[in-house]
Image (tube, rainbow, N blue to C red; front, top):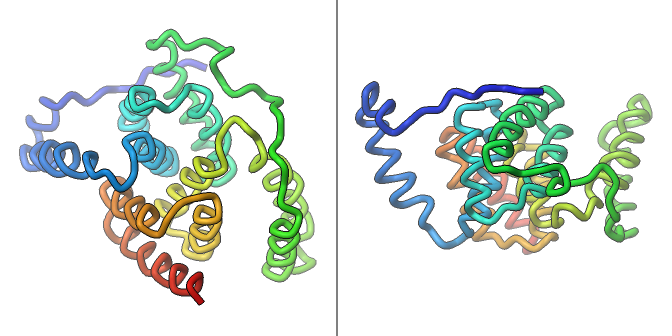
Length: 236
């Protein structure tokens, strides 16, 4: 698969929308990306996930390259694309493959730097998984047995246990994609999972703030309401 992704230079934005160029320079680059509540590496993973979810190849090419500069490994980008194919759809996953392939070629990244098909799986918490299985069965009922089975056997007994992405990073990209897609019922589950995997309330809130610029304010505001409720329930 090969693809040529159009690139937008700073001067291109200035030629069409000087105000947009100014907000990009002063607010996004000059402020948002410099906030230290989450690292630049985290911000790159969040942004890449949002752009994959929205299937925006021009911005995605820039941010895959920036993610590499910010310390995300090629194997982690490769694995994030695999993870998000399940949560953002296969078409969005293959679009991301085409974009990343071009960036990887420009950087001289080769196959042995990518996440392999077969990897060592992490140990699963049996109690947590039993609770998740029961929740899914209660949610979808017996009519959707195949969906529940795939959710267990493919997603949570395989994909989520792949060791080529840390549980925290896997939660980070998944939560970011779901916030971008504005899927509140799924967002609340994955906010809780992200916090179980090591994220703090402050970091989750910062992720939502960051995503406002890449997925739109309404999606971020909706996610903030969901997160606020999730935080309160976790405190009892």
